[in-house]
Length: 251
Length: 350
Image: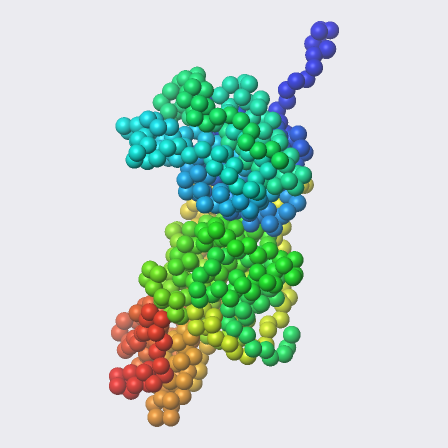
């Protein structure tokens, strides 16, 4: 070892809460990044052994392969309800619901709104990639107008299927949530911001502050039919103008 | 706790759940079982428990899932249309091997039907209203006393076998007041530490799930394991009651509320010189096939009476065979058969 390397500072380690599991996600998918941000936040707060991560139905159903914590796999859209029952039974534990756009905002809209409205002291990671990934690329409630998917082959028509739903803005009409932020993982700057938001959302729960919601705009190159780089650009140029990155609430 | 008190069926079920150690209750209002959530909303805060009125039946059964995964004794209740909505969650809870108690105070169906008591959900309860290869234990009371006693038993069986136990009553039983002695709290304790999720301190992380895609957790093997458990239940947990069945020549077979009407019919028939008896399944699943076969072995005729258009009668035919003389008499849509109707029917058919 040279003198120079001895002086080098350790700037990165594999998060303890992240397993070494080989990824099942497609190249360019954002879930891996988001899992890692969540694992880092769990590490930072030292709550791995206190946490239960609730996985959705969708590509991230296997989040328990990656986060080295207790897990529950819930029915499609029901993670908020499962989280409610779990948190009520284990008020001292850290309950994290990780859900996609079909899960949280289509089939699970009712559960989402009411758990948020009750101010359940849970942390929600909402991954919005504007498409159903696991089932092969169908239109999501967050698909963009004009976006071609397996079930909107001519592009999403607003007059037929409505406009994409903005989850943060909708939840921001409720009294109870303490933290609502939208971020993205399409570039390093946004990833850094997302990391901060996820950590804050988790800290709120540790401090018993209430319902915290982080929406993460993410890439699905496979189902968007794009290269990884184009997918990252699509988030920047198409999604972010409609889904502005900002903190909506930080009480 | 040994005093005789007067209680409505619905309230007796709620109080018995608390006696059984239930401290979490999630539900959505529906007639004719609203006394259960009302009672729970009053009592749970007094004893440090959780009552939560969910936004839907679907949400409430998934809240049950969450609390059960944490090891809590947990219950939900509803009536027929609401139970249909809970079926998704019941299937998931069954797949994930979690204990839970689900109360169905049945009403007339199909659809919105009406709000009167009925026995319309026998098929749904005993054949699994949700998807997949699973079973639920189904306990069917015919008095308020029995409703309370079976509620305590439901929690015990749910914990012992890690599965859904359904208490299948009806709107009339829920609404009627009868004297009862509240049951004792159960003595058995069940360790849930080996499977609950409550943070992985000092152990490897655990996952509660029903998805089995990977070769190392083959779905078929899992299903075979569940079937093995179900077989054990069929051996050990069958319950039924008989009334004047020993020397009967005509055997009435009926469950729940209609069975107590049949009891009156049996007495009237005996006064008229007809040697009648009653066979009453208490567990609808596991169904008492052997017990019924034995009770029916000496009788000339079997009469099945239900508050539906003929559901349990299929299990009676399974037990006794198609060649046996089996008559069915049913009233549905919230209509209750009168004892005289049953008597007339038996005599006219004899």
